[in-house]
Amino acid sequence: MAEFEFNPATAFPRSLKNFCNRFHPGQDERVERMIDLQIALSGGLVLSSKPPDVKISISESGESWMAYSDVITTQSNFFNKVLSCGMIESHTKEINMHELEAQSMDFVLTYMHEGWDSAVEAHFEDLKGEELSMIDNAGIILLADYLDMPLLGYEAYYRILLSLVGLVKKVGEVEKCIFNGFAHNGRDYYWCAMDGCAVDWSANNWHTCHWCALQKPFIAAAEVLKQSQTAVGSQISRNILRLLRRLQGEDFILDSLVIFDEIFKHDYEITQRELCW
Image (cartoon, rainbow, N blue to C red; front, side, top):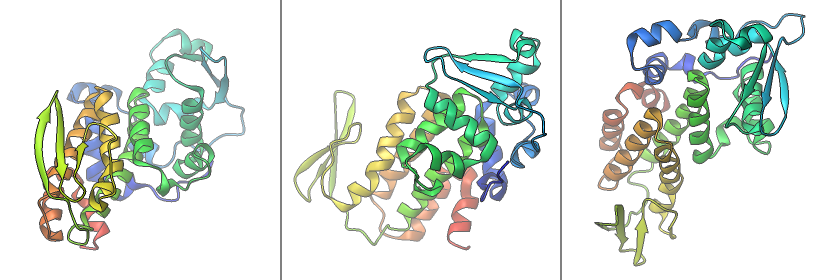
């Protein structure tokens, strides 16, 4: 099995721990169901010479895959529970998945057996792991939440944070619009004085303003996360939007970094690493 080229979960243990706790907010539930992070961080168990022993099928499409139970149970609390709690699947070694597309399942299995870079390159038109769009990363967070895979979720979450730090570093370098805010029909609108366009932060009505264009991918990702109505998605969405709104009034990078660390207070390791503090 291929090793992870870079594992953000290993690099940022405090950030990882806080993120994983969002999957299981109750302490008893976390202790009972949380996968062994040390095994998961190692990329799972070494594959034996035996053939894969679990069949995973998508009911709607009829597609199926063979997987190693030792791998999927160390990466996913969902599969760990299905195969270890006396359910019928633990005896038949056959798991039928519902409400999940075949492409998503294939991505997940590639990730669990080969790692992030291999999964991204195989399923996103040969993109590298760091080139994935913010919307795609948001989708992976939700996919990881559905299958209870905290490490996969953190891989995508880390890359959104990394891009947000990159945006923070541009504060003071990019000319910003002059915004006047108003609300209408439950949406937040901002009037861009640069070209006279009303910008709906809840939709994809964008224009040529450089600062607005830089924020566009994050706004789109936040909307995807918000619409999921999941605890993890809603929290990340709120934090992204809070950061963008507060950055609008900032011109100094140090003040902006303080804002980032205040909003993403459990992820300050990432800021420190990126800026070599």
